[in-house]
Image (cartoon, rainbow, N blue to C red; front, side, top):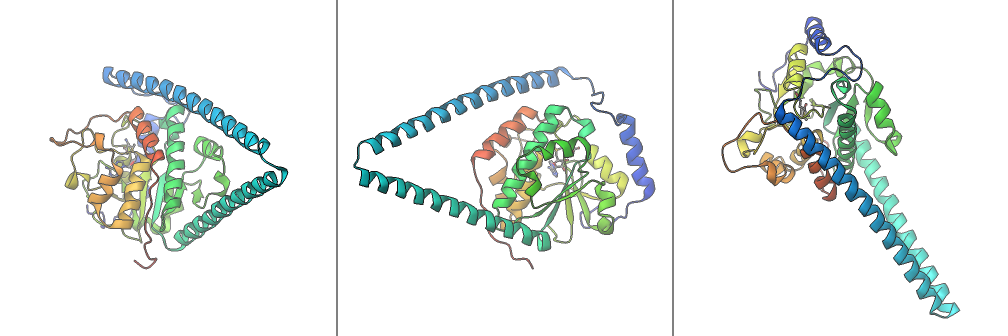
Length: 338
Ligand SMILES: C[S@@+](CC[C@H](N)C(=O)[O-])C[C@H]1O[C@@H](n2cnc3c(N)ncnc32)[C@H](O)[C@@H]1O
């Protein structure tokens, strides 16, 4: 089926999906997980080591930041001590005005971001993050997903022409964890507790589930469509789950055209934030190659043949997220009517 083809979902298909999920879950939390293979155990160990190293690094950074703030404070006090009263007042005044300038700039940027996101609500590309999988993830994986969503919102907000983000299936554990994010209540997004198949039933023919397991290759982005990204961090343990879900619901599916432009050192399954970032880059450049090369980390690419079906690790996902968090990216404006 082509990504542009329309197949209406049926009640029967929805029930099939529900039955399939019920077979693997009893709706409780946490669910029995498939036993870990030796390879998966090794990856888990790697993940744990990574987490420990990350915590250590975080504590070190915090300490360094504290020391630096203390050094600056002392420096400032010393500079005040060594001058006349008149100069002292001048220094304090100039520091105050510098601070004000910075604050004004920040609130101006905030206002502009608000405007862009509000405009996206009216005419931007709709992108849905499907939050119906918390029962298939461990608490750490849910936490990782929440961080990825936070990153998605930040990257989207920096784009001059952002997408309009929907968090659908926003309920239960996902709602609880997302609400804990500072400022989440002010995010300019759409949240919906119902499943997308109900919440967006008037747009069923325009729902396209993005999944690496689809045979359809996404060639273009269509403003009429709602592109759905599976809100799942699973080290591809639940391989094919989003494909099965979309098939059962009879909605369109498509994979990113990665294979047309680059070879990957492991699977073509990307993280939620990478997929969103690629979509945003494509909206800006209309060029898949540029989008992939700018978003997919170099170490995930390879010059040799593609080795498929290699499980991604959560450690890798986190590492990528960390790397990306340090590199702020800009997007250029895409007119509303394009
Ligand atoms: C970490 S993946 C989840 C993998 C999961 N086992 C599955 O069956 O989808 C997160 C989501 O990103 C999207 N995604 C990842 N790689 C993709 C690709 N190559 N093409 C299209 N969508 C992709 C999918 O929506 C996917 O559900």
